Image (cartoon, rainbow, N blue to C red; front, side, top):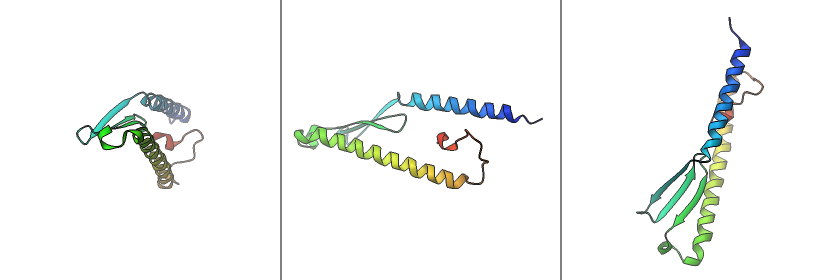
Length: 110
């Protein structure tokens, strides 16, 4: 026999585990480089840019820190806006497909 309470418990458990994993992703750091190491970007597992390093030979020394901060801010803003658009598209795609179950939010699964 189908047990809806058991299913809801499993869904809640899955949501809790996914939240735990998402929270731990903030601690993961990955650095990549381009231009033979002249530009380095470090991001975390939540797709957030943590830092940008630009070789001092590419810019005026007095502009380097500000430029790096502006690049990080612009990239993070673009990623946030992309997430909003992705959630909107996911809602459109799943509208009418999944029943409206209180506490069950598919948007957190992206």
